[in-house]
Amino acid sequence: MYKLWFFVLNAFFFGMACAQDNRIDIIGPDAPELADFGEFDIGVRTVEITIPNSIDVLNTPRGGESVLYDRTLTLEIWYPANLRGQESGTIYNAVSRNPDIVASLNGSAVRDAEPLEANGPYPSVIISHGWPGNRYLISHTGENLASKGYIVTAIDHAESTYDDQQAITSTLYHRPLDQRFVLNALASFSEDRDNFLHSMVDAENTGIIGYSMGGYGLINNLGGGYSEQSVSGFISPPNGLLKIHSTLDPNFRDRLEPRVKAGFAIAPWGMNAGFWELNDLAGVTVPTFYLAGDQDKTAGYENGTKKIFQRTVNSNRYLLTFIGAGHNAGAPIPLPTELNNDANIEAAGHYRDENWDNVEMNNIMDHYATIWFDHHLKGIIREDKLNIIPSAYQERLVIEYLSVGE
Image (cartoon, rainbow, N blue to C red; front, side, top):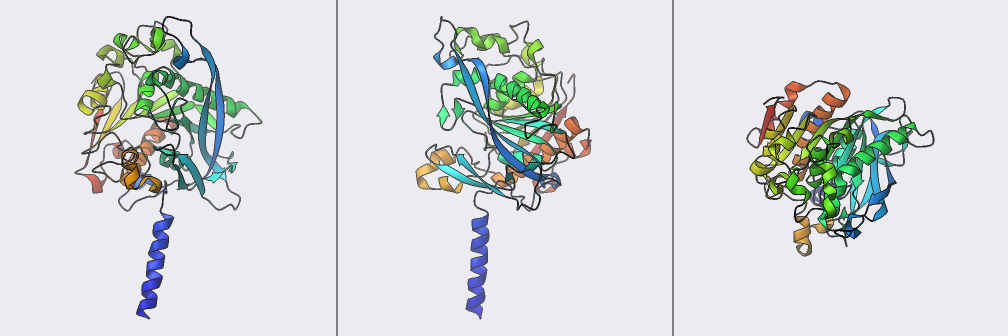
């Protein structure tokens, strides 16, 4: 009898372990309360959009005319759904940091489920990955926020994904434009009677989550024009193309998107590389939540995210610091099991943090993202919770607040 129970228990725990493989929706035992999924079932669809007559940075010669092309972006869109008895769950076939390996990620959404129009329209949140990355890197937040009544759209930025990583010049130019174009596309989807998102998107209340290079584009779209020196830097796009995103351009502020009501910047890249000066960051007026690890060697902490936080003096902002964490604080999904081997140590490092567990970081990030976007996009005020560190992490997290003028 003992042996039988031993076998049954082993089989049970083995099954549980397998079921947890590559899950993006785990809520850990120490998760803050608002990390839990919300009241809505979730649908998900993959959509392609095209930016016509975009500048082809990679093929534009220095000193020559700009070459134009149609720029295609793949989107993953999560939304509140009416499952009509369907069982929740889907598999995302995601290209990994080793582009030869496609990981099978497990989530709670249902592919192509019927949208739940009854409670719409829903505020919009756009997710913008790093260089390289893809639309699945922060998919835990995509599902989590959709379950709380948001339309969440993660972008595959062309020429910046794991399987299509090109010279950084393309990303430097296109990242702010991609984010704005996606916002416009979502607004048009909501107005199109033939689109699955018809009447679903409240584009007037949009937030953007930007990680690393996504944060670089986000800070620009919040009003932080790039510095004069960045326009002609050695890694900059040719022919001064970056000028349209800089404070040198008198029309820069006219192109900003007033429908963006809140930013969530995770380890935004660029400050440590000279892309902003003090006066440039004073142009940020949109409320912004910053998240970073104090050991970030990629975007920098004291000379990177924290300095941006300190210098965006015309906005209300928070900074959540993961003590001991590096550039991967908060954002990346847990390491896919397909990369958890000796042959993929370097690729695996794209997801891991030396001192933090990914599920814990994801849960913490989604807790604060919920509070932040609920506040600024829905008018649900929980400022007391913004200033509180969850009890399980009192020694490992620090949160700071600065208001306009500070």
